[in-house]
Image (cartoon, rainbow, N blue to C red):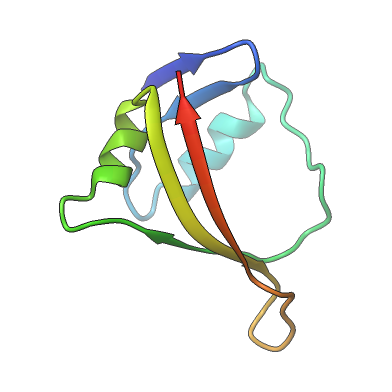
Length: 93
């Protein structure tokens, strides 16, 4: 598991297989980071954009210090949704 530690946040990145949900939830519940829910239960939908070389994905997994992420995000279900927003995030350093 790759750990990225910055003054603002801590990121842990790993790749899991389909069916590992129980392992993931166990890891989160037993973590020393005291995870807790901040928002009420809701559906978060995201559509990420990348190129044929999967540059954004690779940069994210490898923790590249400079990268750009582009996505459309909206909250809700098929029957009830909020307006979507286009987000372009840039990370430098």
